[in-house]
Image (tube, rainbow, N blue to C red; front, side, top):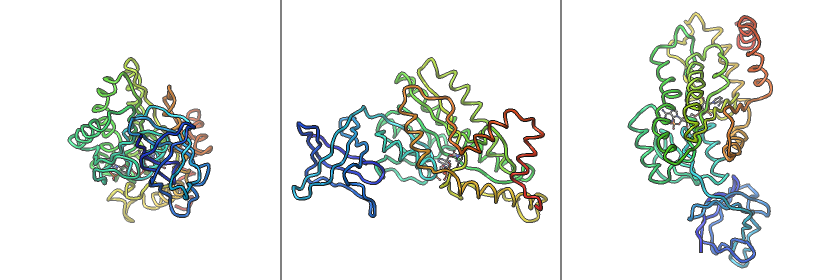
Length: 350
Ligand SMILES: NC(=O)c1ccc[n+]([C@@H]2O[C@H](COP(=O)([O-])OP(=O)(O)OC[C@H]3O[C@@H](n4cnc5c(N)ncnc54)[C@H](OP(=O)(O)O)[C@@H]3O)[C@@H](O)[C@H]2O)c1
């Protein structure tokens, strides 16, 4: 008898005790098979990973429940050792979508965010974490290590403050740097000894297209993402002899980021000398994000990449025009780049 629990695909899940019959079917007796209302998951063909109590993820195809027999049959397709990933900033946006994709891919996910209370949710272990607070980082790592040491760390926690360079206060700059950049540094310092002790592992850090090029009124965010880019190059060089691989994720605009992590600098009022240009640029930024790419696809891409033995140092996940913008930014001079970016973000009559 083995006990399995977890999600099948993104719509259904199963918990219960099952036996593996001689023909390779997991037979759940009186199992709880969850289905989201309105979804057709649970029909023949739904598949995904389930976690078992003996630290193995099994890939299953779900057959239509044989209600009459009171049992549900799941076809075991393959199995792999279950690995553990710690994910920061997993309560919303790309962090949440990435955590869910990793869970669906058979990882044991330990997720951290300030708004979490400790406990199980949606097939993941959630722990309270504030990456700007050294004590909270240590607490998170201690609790997470007791559950399962990490094979990988994925760092998504982030925020930005919108405002002009002149009027964004030093305190506002500090908050962004403390969360986006120093938050990653704190987490890495706590996790690197654990990865070294295990003979290696993977560290994924969320940068941005803004880690490669600056846009108006996002200087604090852009500076923090540029800092991450430089830092990651050093970390990759130092981690190599210990089997530690580093990957920068550089997303372009994606939907689902929450407005509460994009506050305006306090000084950005209608009296600001930048008010008109600021309005134009922030409208464009907002439009680009709300019409941005699908966060689920990004999550699945990261999960697929993390499964590979060797991961790339950079993974840019962006629309074709944003890929192109990064490409030409490398070759055009500062003056032409500036003209192109101003034309894009600042309306003529602003
Ligand atoms: N969305 C995009 O288009 C886009 C594009 C490029 C890069 N990115 C990057 O992707 C990452 C996720 O951004 P998003 O826009 O998708 O998500 P988001 O909705 O802005 O979520 C930010 C996440 O960070 C967490 N967080 C903020 N401060 C934290 C702190 N001090 N300690 C721990 N967690 C903290 C938040 O949770 P709590 O409030 O619960 O702590 C939340 O889960 C960020 O690094 C962002 O820079 C996003």
